Amino acid sequence: MMADKRCAYPPWIIIFVRWSYNEVVLESVLDNVHIVKLMSYSLLTNLNAIRAVGPDEVPPVLIKRLKHRLCKPLCIMFSQLVSVVIVPEAWHDAYIVPVFKKSIVGDISNYRPISLTCVLSKVMERIIARKIFDYLQLNNILNKSQHGFIRRRSTCTNMLECVND
Image 1 (cartoon, rainbow, N blue to C red):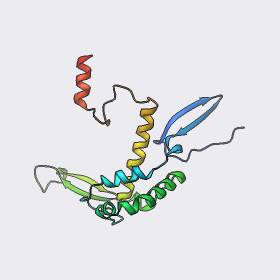
Image 2: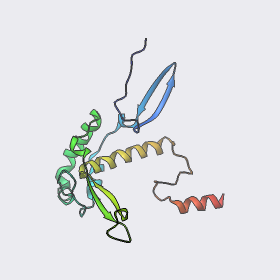
Image 3: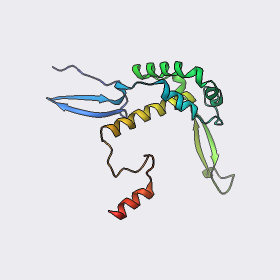
Image 4: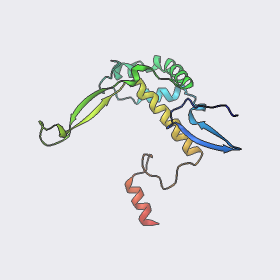
């Protein structure tokens, strides 16, 4: 009888499933994620400092101004969080703020909800998203006709490609 192997990762992180001799092996992109100081530094440099604070009450301008000192400890913290597949409870919280869209101010349907999350969770999310995207590109998993959510590609390039083919 085969032992029950459970994956610690959420289902949206599992990228590759390999079948071999009646056994399913789940491989994850996050098994080999190495967060380097340069990546964290570039994300902290490009951080929008005028954004509102989230539930952690840490303003983005503070993190951006202290990026030289915070970069190494954040890399260590992010690496440890990825290795144990846990995020802090505070990162699960968000402030929901209604933002006016159009037309009549008194009508509730003219507002859209915006969630304000912790700044550090956004930085870690961007690092993981980049790693997953790099993995997809490196292993040629993305289709060449994929245009959504890819840099320098849009609906216009999709239409041009469709018309010219």
